[in-house]
Length: 243
Image 1 (cartoon, helix red, strand yellow):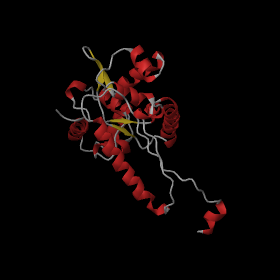
Image 2 (tube, helix red, strand yellow):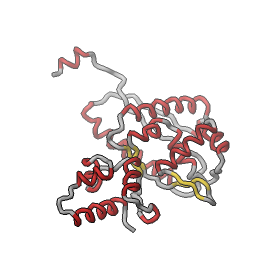
Image 3 (cartoon, helix red, strand yellow):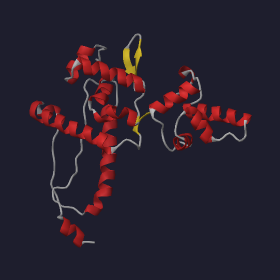
């Protein structure tokens, strides 16, 4: 079974065979997507948003059951609310727990959300292809690997972080210490070490996430936040004096 990229490449090759002058730009216009984005996608340098993938499926009249979908979903500007609001990925993770119930009220209670928000979020996650409905099991995970398109403005991710800080505060107030871990250290450092520090944090985060996510006996949804930020700030005059 061909992947989506392979399927698109073959469709372009067929058009090229009929007309050797047929360009990738013309193919992109036919698909109604950006030519540069299509070129980068076919060369595996950039992912397309779900909206663009849907356009390809429609234009090429693809049967999605006969096309191997790429093993990730890329969220773009059109899906920015999924990036911004914390509960989308929390719901996605809750579906993977052992005792998950395909019941809106149960989900709402577990995540402290309204049933209306849960229903809308489930529909949206289905729409972008992160989850799907199974006749026997109810909602199940369709894709577990998510990527953020580079065109999504940082403000969308920042909104999510603000929400997580608020949820962390509530956890600090309400959850017993046996179910959470909050700690910190204050130290002086050379800012030139920050790039290396960020790399070490990313490695630790990925290693710990893999450890906690491993196995089938999962019952709760957790969030890992790691914060490293300056407490001291230079004045504008001090900053300019170093130039």
